[in-house]
Image 1: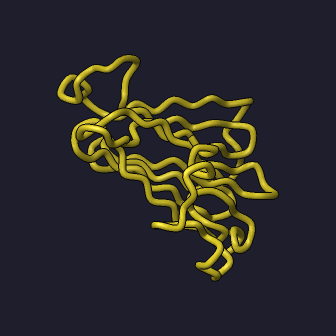
Image 2: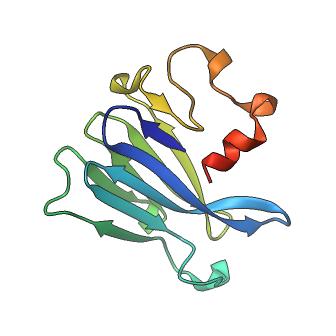
Amino acid sequence: MFRHKTLPYAVHTFQRRCFGNAACHCIIAIRSGDDVIVIDSCGPDKTPASRIPQIEVQLYLNGDLTPGTIIEQYSGGYAYKVRLPTGTVIQVKRVGGVFLNTVIYLSTADYNQTEGLCGSADDDPRNDLFGGNMPTEWIKTWR
């Protein structure tokens, strides 16, 4: 979804089939420095959403959590905010049973330094590849 061009920050997702042929996010992996924060509502198999009580968070750390990274839980464990050292905030909420809604709020440190589905953050919508202008092959590289 999002990758900083010069700093070690990124957000990736895992999708599961939903609503027929659509793909919905159910795992979000956030890289902050040399650590990865995984927010998972999929579970280890194709368990129905009704059997998964809440989101599971796993931290893959190399020592202490990267300084400046903050993880907040709210809404009874059904939502999280992760703040990266740059000030970028990733908000993850459980919706529709097992699926996750992810919103990324970029910081000023991301200006003209991002790539991915969130665009380049340079105030030029012509180079952001969204909507009907998004080439299929480019999308596949972000799977």
